[in-house]
Image 1 (cartoon, one colour):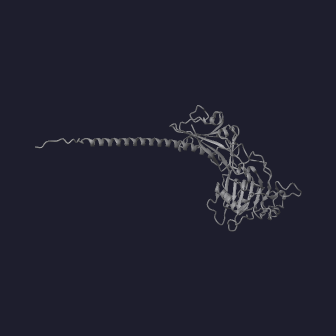
Image 2: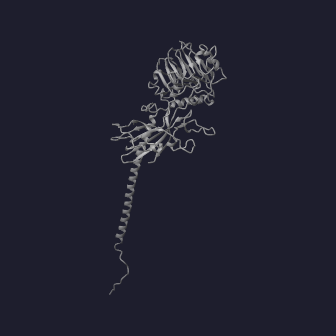
Image 3: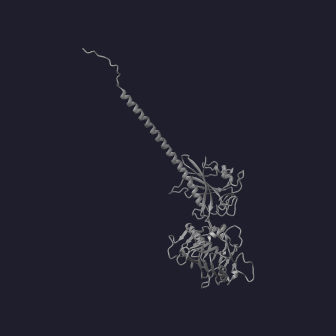
Length: 509
């Protein structure tokens, strides 16, 4: 007979349930963590999207205002609002208003939802105390194409106080003098050091603040600010301080000038005083014809061409004499820009920045010949243009007036019934001809240099330029009233290519 015995072992019933519960609990914790993480990422994504939207909306406002500062922009504010050639007064503002559906945007009104309280932070006075003008954005209440959702942009002159920046190193912020940007500024050792300066200098341009405020219906708000300055095309190689050194400059070796038999045609280095198109003072006289190489036969090549009517070549020298002597003399240009390579590079820079290039593609060989009818019709005093002709330009039959910078890389055939206000550069073949009558005049300055072989069109080898030539002695008799130095026309032709952003930052709310 068997006898039951106790083994002392405990039952394992239920352990599987505990493990299952523990696993479920662990999975639940992980699931909850994933849900929380997913919600957090969704919230972060939404916040980032909102922040990015309002940020780029403010950027769009800055860029619209910066673009509309340029006279070449079809939506230019207009010279009655602001001009790159005049100083914008302190205490004045331009507001660009960008209304959405139902918006009432009055940034100078302290009771308005979109009040510009940043102005008081910068200048110590309320925006309502400034002399303000307002224009609407190009996107304002657009019925078909909603634009960026910024609310307003402010444009104003900058000071040390508004920038919270010690520009001139003093211990206090200047509150009464506008800030300028001087690209030709040098440090105490004489090294180039483009920088901001307090007040104007002969080579400085005014710096402006552009401030944009964007706001979303959710309440998200962003204020961004540019400091900008107008940057013109750099003509330093042939126009130190943006001034040419003669009414007609012949750069190179063995240059030639042949004048017309007409007594009406003149080349005058005295700055134009009648009918001036700017308020700047007239400048000192410069030579009527200047040449750069005083060791070759340039002088005789020119004086023989001016001997028919010597009194028609007027400028700073020679002094009044009897019989009259033509104003012909050597002029100085940087040595580095009296080489074919340097001047050709300069011409290519102008082509790269041109408003109109003729022909628009690569220049064909043999050189292409353009006509006056190919020139843009949109040129005006308010809209000077850079026109680059990659080849010859024949103005015969063109009885119009051009404004801005004209570059011709081939031969320029001059019709005296045509007129140009600005700068004419004949760099490449370096030849100018003319043989017709007319009543037009070129106001500004002429510059001629031969950098390429006229027969092969290849760049001249070696360090020396070729013999630039201006020949107005061809038959029939040349007419027109000639070439007149005009600092206003030159300045207007140098309308800035862009307003460069010197600094950019976000303003804390």
